[in-house]
Every structure is written in structure tokens, then in C-alpha cells.
Length: 385
Image 1 (tube, rainbow, N blue to C red):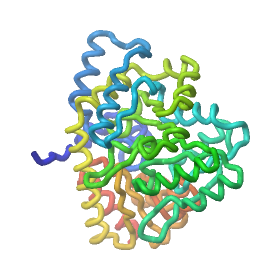
Image 2: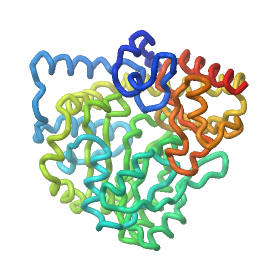
Image 3: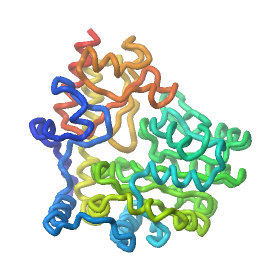
Image 4: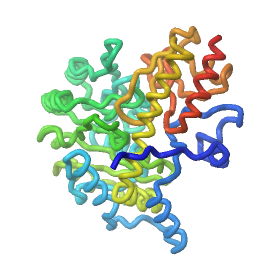
């Protein structure tokens, strides 16, 4: 049967939400910045959360409950041909904690860690929080496509950096790394006796027709030195419920997970654990519909830009619901999102926050209704004159 795209909630419902997306700006601003969806929760998740409330099942997470871990294994097996062992997984609050707690055990204070801007802005903060120093190796960009600069990463590791913090798929550009690229990255990292922490939070939102390869599925080398951060929070809009998974495939990284203080587990949310289980186990049709809606919205955004704002270029993503917009031709400076908010009352994510390579860019959230995209482009076009 064909996939039925997920429909966004009505604006009257959305404006009753109190989360960051809907609570930060006044009502005359169209919020299209932070990575929250405007879609309703998947029915299976909603049902399970209501049942938990009815039962008063609001206590601490049960570290012996493998439901979410097994659901992720089954989902990864069906979607990517990778079946990680739930016994090699750990539970925590979110992928940021996976990153920080892993870094604390993989580096010495002051060690360099490679990141690849333009990149998810918290990476700049998570590396020092974990004790490291950021080493920037920007993505290669030929004007049409982004890619990891493998030679640059090799030089950075040869120069003393100890490992790589990988964003896979890559936020904000929506890059899905090819398997051959990840295989070569694994060889480079192994040659320097380094490590990779792979943030794969956007992986379940890989677009239809595009193949995602988990880093730990790439090779024995990757499995030996890699640890993955997995979560349903982006795929199923669960960020506020606070659950993510450490995933390992080697004894070394499994020992790292088992060395964590028990509080790292108990800081996770009970509702998040329930929702993660129901998302990966019983909400795959909903997720397919959401991806279809996002891909349709990307098509719609391109059509709107072509007709009303041709100076803005969409760098088409292959994953997630985040559109990377080159707005430099508008003459709105290094941070066009600031002008968009002031003149058009459209809130976008600031490009320079993703690194120097984001100058002239802004990020737009496409997990919304097509009407919202139409309104945003028309407002931006009017502001551009």
C-alpha cells in the first residue's frame, strides 16, 4: 500500500503547546527554527503514555527493562540490516549525554576531538564539557554536495586529535554518509588508534530511496573503536521525554558503557523509555508517513522558492526535516535568520551558530504543514522586496 503522509496539527492546536518551538516567540512570529515537529504523536505512543498515566507508572526507569533496546534492535535490523545486541546497550537522558559521558572515558583533559562544521551547534560545547578541545575539519563542499574531508580528518588525527565526533546523518545539511566513506573513515581512525562517537539521532528520518549505514555496521575496525548514540527523540518528536541509547559492538566499548555511574541511567525518563519502545516497535507506518510528508514539503519549499524567492538556494537534504538555505544572495549579512525574524517575522535557526561555514545560511524546519512553508516563503519574499 502507498505511504500516507502524516498531516500536521492545526495552528490553533500548535499555539497551545508550551515547548520551546511554540513558547519562545510571540504569536506573530512563524516558528521554524528548533527541531520539533508540528505533527501529532504516533497513535501507539500516545496510547502507551495514556496507559502509563492511568496506571501511575511515573517512577524511575527500570534498568532491567530491555523493551526499548530490543525494539531499537528490531527496527535497525529491519531498516538497516544491523542488529545490535541489547546487552551491549545503555540507557540515558539524550544523545548529548551519550557524547559527553563517552568522551570523559575516551580522552584525557585537553585532547583534541574532530568535529565537521557546519555542524549541530552543541557539538562546540559538548567536546569541552567532556574534557576535550574542538578540532574543526569542515565538510568538503563543491557547491553542489557536501562530504566528509577524509584527508583533513587524517591530518587532524596525525596532528594529535584523539577521535572524531561524527554526525550521521549530518545536521544541518542532511548529508547521509556513503558506506564507502565510512569504511575509509574507520580505516583512518584505526590507523591512528582513535575512536568515533557517532550521533545517529536523525538516522530513522533518512528519506525514502536513500540508504543509511550505521557506523558500527561498517567494519570490524569501526565496531572496535566506535560507539553510537541512538534515540527516537527526533524520529518520533520525543525530545522532552528524555531517553537515548548508548550502543556498542565491541568488548572495549561495552565495558565503557558498563563503567558508567548508575545515575546516568536513572536520569532517563520513564515516559521516554515507554515512548521509545512504542515508536520503534509499533510506529513504523507513522514514521514512513512522516518521512513522506517531509519529502513532499521539501519539494513544496523548492517550488515556492523558485517562484517567489529564487535568490535563496535550498541545499536539498537526504535525511531529517531540516532545510539548509543559502540566503547569501539576499544581502542580509552573515546571519540572515536575524533579518528574517525582524523583517518577515519568521524564526529560522542562525547559520553562523553551526560554524563559520554557516555565514549567509539559515536552517528551516520542514516538519510542518505545506501552508506554513508557503506563508514563510511569502513573508521572506516580501521582506526581500
